[in-house]
Length: 408
Image (cartoon, rainbow, N blue to C red; front, side, top):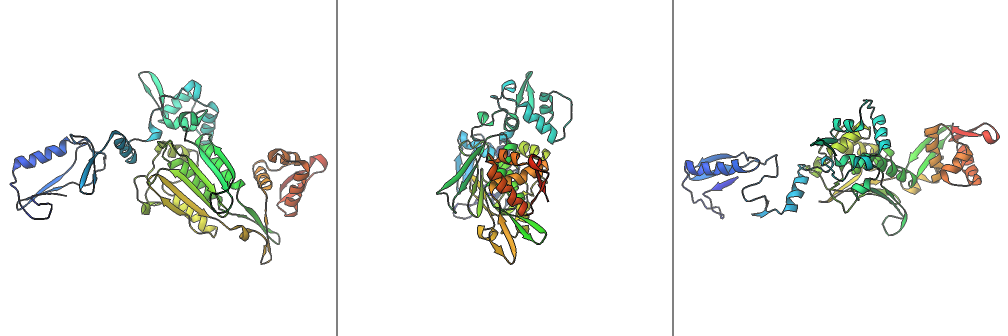
């Protein structure tokens, strides 16, 4: 609200209110881009101008763009205007045309074909036409131009087009970042980054089996659904304009941090999980088509529910201007080891966990296949497989070289 006729100290001075004055004020509002809706009222010799918060920010006046900071108005520079437009969702990275994308040189037919298969698109059209129908490409003056999202999903080399569009997984010893045990950069397309980061977590966290009588129960250090949702969230909502940082997945002894560039987008922290505001509309839509995300705005709640169902505390969310961090607190190692109340808890090694995933996908595994997927010797493979049989996780079928292992 703007009051004309009242001094800065609050003293009522009054002014001469004329139709010409009110018309001048209305003209100023009308000449802003976009037009500003105002309400003008009179009270004695005070003119009251009500300016409701606009939905089409930023607004430009005749002298440029200004940002109100306390009692002062600060003129915005070119970079500040661009940053403000990005924050307000007027400029979205995934929707911008990438003039450096060369379809013949950069487009990956295999990745696009996999996308069509997973999203159940069976249209018999040239790939360029399908991209245009999906609003991922457009034609200008007879030439095809492709949006940034095409480079993130369907280019042969994602980092050629955006050097920071990758995810890093780091395993630390202990509960701080002083000692790195393992580090991997995942620079495939966004779908591959999700899958690679999830596998990195699975490989570097504990998986135990609780045996009680004939009942075997799989116990994860962290619920897989929560971690996958957290990784998808980070890759989907990160700020791809920020070229100095990437997504990080930090694994400590008993907690995981997932960090992405870009603070909250057009919502407040208390609105998380209640209001949907997507920084990257096209990325989110492709993830939805691939089945990586469900109903918009429910990711945070699904993470909380998964942690609660696993008997763990809800994830911690930290937000700054430039970064979003979510922390998952898992089962401690001592909770998953030893014997408790007559229930034996056995921790599996990384090779055995990889073999279990192989059996889930293929239905069975041989000693030779175990050696190949784990790059290990026959004696080690035999020892590991025998333990899985002893634990009644796998069962041996056949004789000699024809022996295969399947789930019991």
